[in-house]
Length: 266
Image 1 (cartoon, rainbow, N blue to C red):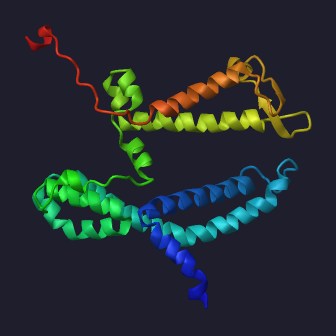
Image 2 (image 1 turned 120 degrees about the vertical axis):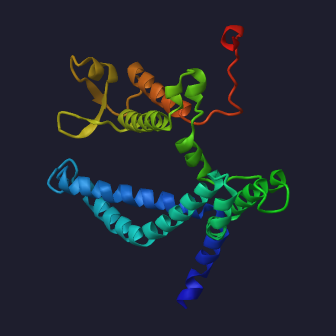
Image 3 (image 1 turned 180 degrees about the vertical axis):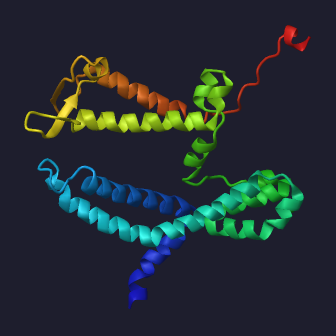
């Protein structure tokens, strides 16, 4: 009876083979965020005793229970998939035929687990290095996988910012990740500030929008009831943070090769 009840879910899951890693990763991330929020709420914010946060107790308890249960079942599976993905990425980076041949069985098992797109990429890589027959160009998958966006952003050494400012430091992945992460966090905080408020009012309720310029100047922290969208400095901060996020993503097309002057040739 139970197998019949879960049969549609099982069929749906099998049909999402190319998205398994993305679904498991997203679920694990959200569940971890909910559990961490519950820990901060109960142990650092004193939410159970704070009248301003008491209305979140039921939702926080529910999130803690559900998030913990999901993590128990989903996190180990995600770590398994992530380990297979790491192995496959190592193989796809390798150009050594002996290493590729030695890791072939494990790589093919990993690609099968991750889906048809990764299997096609692995086959094309083997063809390119003479370990399989066929034409590598014909074997490349037409589509991608959802995690490509995050993977490409995480690994890129050719961001939009590095195209705008031609300096080696802007091609460092760690700097690119830092700028993108700051841009994302500040964007979320400022949207919340404008829509719901981050400052407390006279009744100690966190429902006021902070005027960004006053906060930055340090003269005084002025705030008005949220939602409030007339703060020009707030919009400037939001656009700058969104711009930082946007320029941290990989640039399109091939990176232009620098022109060599006659003096440099000599």
